Length: 229
Image (cartoon, rainbow, N blue to C red; front, side, top):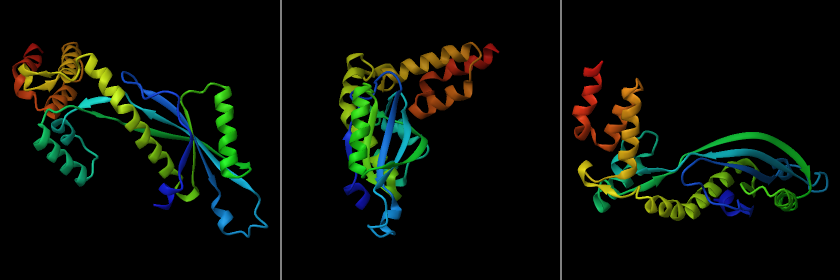
């Protein structure tokens, strides 16, 4: 809680998460070094720790409660939420799944207090017009909490725009012929079938059909891939 309360963003990226592609965000997390709490204030130099890295946001994926419940890696509480969403909104109610990868790059010790350093970095990024960079001030031993807090807030601020752009292309429209699955799912499955017909990964196609609960709709076509061989 202390890390959350003492984390703040000095500079946000100048654009939202991309809807139809990945987003590469460089981050700078500035903290007061933990040894400042150990050394006396008179002996410790005024300096801060700057951690630099990149957060790669994959292309946002349209999912449903049915699909998400067939993915691995969520907590028991998350699966319970998905079950409740399925009952309240329907198993094919569309949502957006965001996946991130953190790639830490380096850590530097810089003169000045954390706030001053963060503002210097921010000013430099503005001069260089680095639109996909974020600068944060956090707590040294829990610096990654600052990163997670930013990811949550940035995702929340982008979600409405992402959903709107997907909806404008009809990607969220339910397809009655396929049990109400969103058009984006049907489009992806069609693409995977074409790849499988050219020798692509049939196991991956089968797994995707199962995640969407659509194998029954495609069973004959899927089995024909083996008959053709």
